Image (cartoon, rainbow, N blue to C red; front, side, top):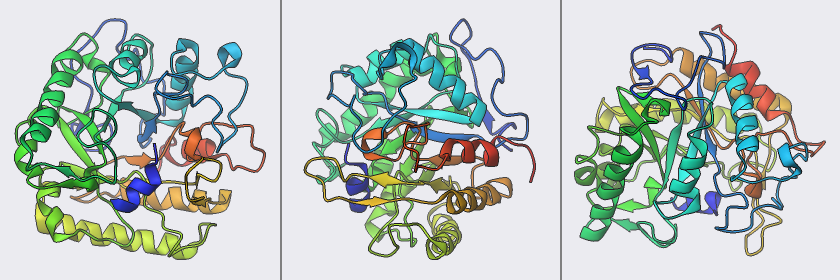
Length: 364
């Protein structure tokens, strides 16, 4: 999915602000089987295309996946694997943010139709804005909202999701903020033109989160119209080895905290309505992917733990501009080595355990 290269281009959690509304029936969550009350929800990107027929992602070259998966394979089509993922995510307080590639893609409607009947945590969506049949062909091509067909497709697909899923029989499964299902847009930082005008047609029924966060904080003036169309921002990936070493260090953690504070000011300058979801990415690895540039970084268990605690400190004392949950890239993006799902790599820290310890436990 070339996430990192594209990124280069580019109330409490249990209170009234965060709700699960509507729905019912077998696909609704039966209980809070995840963290105890007081834990912090973590939104984590959930890949939907492993062995899906879109491409063969089964080998997962960047990150060796475990081989104890039900059935002995790894496939986004396998309900037993999905059920195992859901159980793990609930224990860690993770809310999957599942990729949606459009109505006709397996990693779109077909995945949701497989996923939703399986009991599990609340679900958010990651709207794939670029790629085949999307708003632009690839992340290197801006998504231009001065083009009527681009605006029409975006509005039409948001309405489609509303009618088929958010207001459908499984509507109770979708995470809602201010009563609206949360949709993260990958990648809003490729948007150009009057996105705010397009978003005005849909923000009454969907809560839009964009991929705008950077370290250091930077919001180009031409992007104010994009940010104005959003309800919140976070990021898919923002680590930069031109500034920081391959092994994440204290300099990055300090720059990250500075960026959080500066983004609070930048967002307030655009609209006090727009919130921030503090993002975190513990590792990335594209060295085994043909055609890539070999970009990689990692964090030790100690640095990852401190990183997660910094994020929690902002989330537990959010102030007016920070939403009461975190964002993580990712739960199971093994192809690019950012996954926190358990692996068979003995040198990789237990990132999932760190998330569970820091966020699923009540306390300050």
